[in-house]
Length: 203
Image 1 (cartoon, one colour):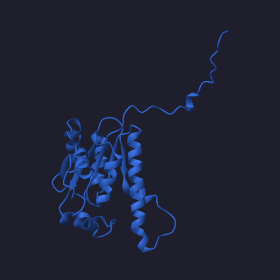
Image 2 (cartoon, helix red, strand yellow):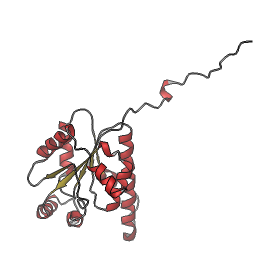
Image 3 (spheres, rainbow, N blue to C red):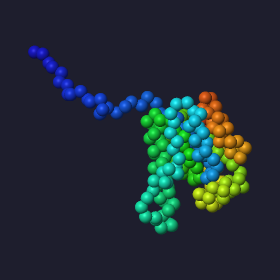
Image 4 (cartoon, rainbow, N blue to C red):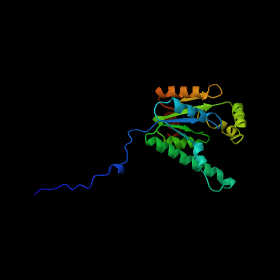
């Protein structure tokens, strides 16, 4: 008596989920509003090897539509947007994509949430600094930012104290900052800032 192995039809190629061999690198630019994060991100895309995505949180806020919420509900909506943004960043990185993320860690929960979501070995945390008087001057000059936003964020975005690299945009141009970040990528500090922060804040 012989036995036969019954197999189903071959899975069509277009139905297969592509493999992801490894997660992608995340460069997280952390600084206040008007500190120069977006300008640095644009320069990075021109000097880094290969394909990178620029993911600014402002783009997610810009997708919001519908009717404005009452004032008491605005912060809750901002927090929901940021939580979704965190998961979008983590999902893109998990898919093997390389990202430049433009985002202020202006509340402790934002850092804690990202420590849980991102691969600490593949996250490069950059502190984007600028003196407050210069931030306020830029706000006035630009005219497209809430006046005083940088001041409200100033004491919070770098409160955790640990970055893989700190840069001052009042001293260096966006292009110079981008080159310094590129150099850090080739010789990353070990343990990374995210690894150290996870150990201290997520024991």
